[in-house]
Image (cartoon, rainbow, N blue to C red):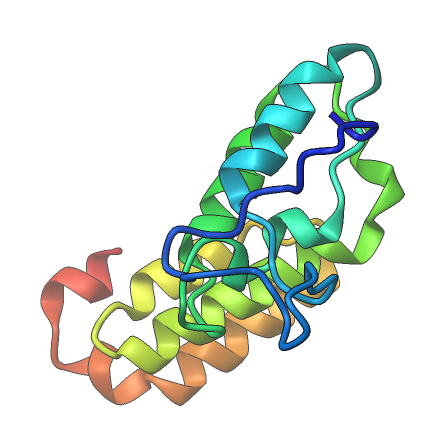
Length: 148
């Protein structure tokens, strides 16, 4: 796929990946489906990259990181993927997803769940403590959340 003369597809929400001059704009996002197909085609050497998990590769909202976080979680669970090439990617996606859930409001328990996915125990405990302390008022009146 990398040696193809055919340009990589742009996300469905974009009308065109062409720049003002009519040439392909290298700064335009590439569709997440294309990244997945590229990974499947290169089974022997799976090398996912950060651009695959950019929010703009799946959504017109640059702050919508739900699909990239879920996709990363699934791919990370599959055997044979060398994720060590991107040590900060995991933490970045987790922090972005926690932030998104916190901004939505009312789903802080899901933000805590996502925060618990951090690999570093110190960062994980710190983030969970911050989340709980910021939203203690939500938790104090809700018996179901207290049990959680």
